[in-house]
Image (cartoon, rainbow, N blue to C red; front, side):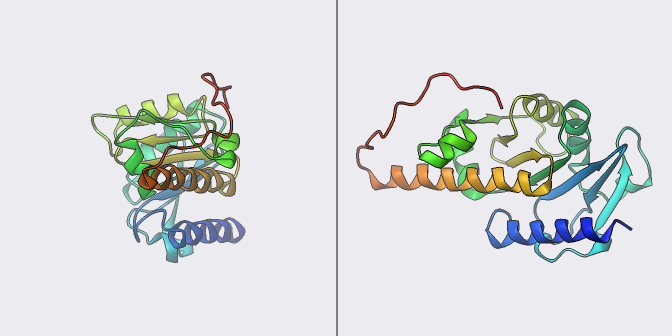
Length: 203
C-alpha cells in the first residue's frame, strides 16, 4: 500500500488530467520513482476515479510480481528513470497535440507563453509503439534533453521532479497545440509578434 499523501497527489493529478480532456476514461498512466522502486498506476485503472489499490510498487531494475498488474508502459517508465534524473512521469493522450504529431516532426508553439515555457517539443516515432523496448529507448534518450515529447499518433510522455511539474508541461503543450490549430483554421495570415529563433537552448 502506497503512502496516503502520495496517493492523494496521484488522485488529484489523475482527475485533473481527465477533467481537462487530456485522455480518455481509462487511458494514460503515471508513476513516481522512490529510490530503487517505481510506483505506477495499475493496468486499466480509470484515471479520473483512482483508488489507492490502483497503484503498484515494483522494482526499478528487476522484474517482480508487480509487473503483471502494472501499466503496459512500465518498461518505458523504468527506462526513463534509468537514463534521466526524472522523479515523475505522466503519459496521456492530448488530442490536439496528437493531431499535430501526425503532420510534423516537432511542435513549435506560436504563442508567447508556449514559446517561453516549451521552446519546442520533439515528435518521435517507433515501429512498435506500445510498451516495447524500442519505444522505451527512443523516449528515454529524447527525454535526456527535453522534459516532454510526443510519440507520433500515440500520446505524450512528460517528466518532472513531481507529478505536478509533469502535468504542467502537458497542459502547456495542449494549450499551445490548440492555438496552432485554431490559428490555422482561421485561414488568415498570421501576424508575427517576434522572430522565432532557429536554435533553441536545451532544457
